Amino acid sequence: MLLFLHLNSVLGLSLESHLLNSKKRPPGVKASKASGKKTFDPDKQVEEFERIWKIKQKEIDAKERLSKMSLLDSLIGKKEPLLEYEESLKKKLINGLF
Image (cartoon, rainbow, N blue to C red; front, top):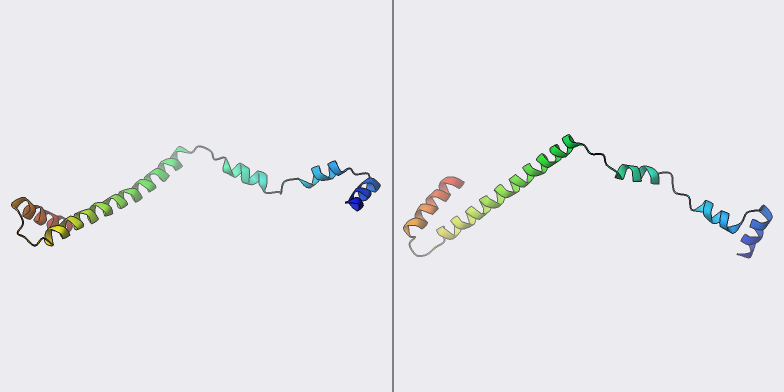
């Protein structure tokens, strides 16, 4: 530390000016901050929303199909005879799924 202070006094630099100069930002910091500030583009946002909506619809359809298959599985797995409405539901599910 003494050597550092001695060199600074010989060179005419103060410790404060050295510390201020050493804390400069790397060259890409401003560019990365500017890229974080996005501009408003309604067309791009609509396309992104539609893309996400299609994915969500596929997910909802898959869950609905899985739910119907689970219901059909429980109807098929019943040991006792099915009631009339259960039998019609079973036929409807079979026709709809397959």
